[in-house]
Length: 337
Ligand code: GLV
Image 1 (cartoon, rainbow, N blue to C red):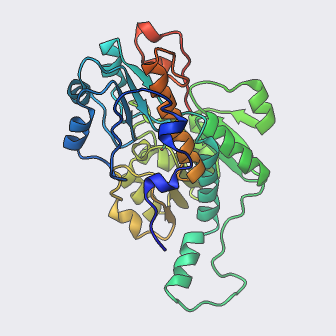
Image 2: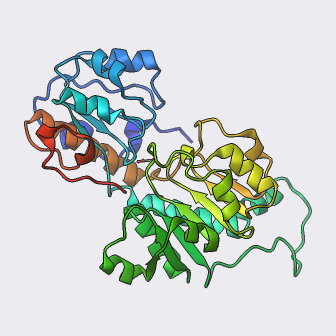
Image 3: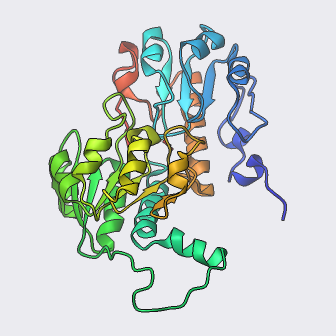
């Protein structure tokens, strides 16, 4: 089995599908890994467009390294906590775009997978088999928690929150949600979702799934006090960004039995994982795989490149982020997931 390179995996020919004609020089990182700070600053020097990944910190230093000709930052992610959008807005001449909608279903699949893995103890079960630990079917062996008729609390009913709710509803769960604003009545009706306060959500949900973006307001949204508000038989699922949860407080809460389990796709200081989590059987831990399908990563890359190319061609990019662009660009629509 030969490990494929990134270019063999993606499902299109970037140069012909997206960069149709004379866009000038395209520098493509030869590495399928985060660039170091130095590599990033070197790579962007003189660029008109930067297509960056979620671990690339885009701030004044990188904008300066690029130079005044820079026209667009196209983030290959829906979340953009890696980008100092105020620094971009201040420049007044640089567009910022993200990749909403194309990763909705893949990420919701992972949220639902984590709900099933945590409630049914699947990681723990797999470890029993792989470690060749003796086991035998018995009435009370490794019992989990059924989710039918239980309540899923969605924090942030954006596109991914909705897609997760849709899946959970098909599994027989009731849906409540909290967030900055109430969803469209048609969406509430489709999902049978009830808008509740954050307090009510934490206090009543059997499973709490986080789908809010990471920003100054949501940093450590789930801290020791919030974890105490949750039911002791409840599960916490995080597929958004690690810092939305105070990871040490989560370890303490899991150890103390303040909540029943957690399923995490994201971590506070990725790729590091709090060692306390590694010791806990009731934590399911996967390495930021939310959007990691061939189809979705291809769609994300193509959308980001399409955004960049549109700007270079003097057109409006398809998925620009209104909230953080300058006056010049303020006709556009914000796209959160
Ligand atoms: C992935 O984590 C994303 O925000 O797109």
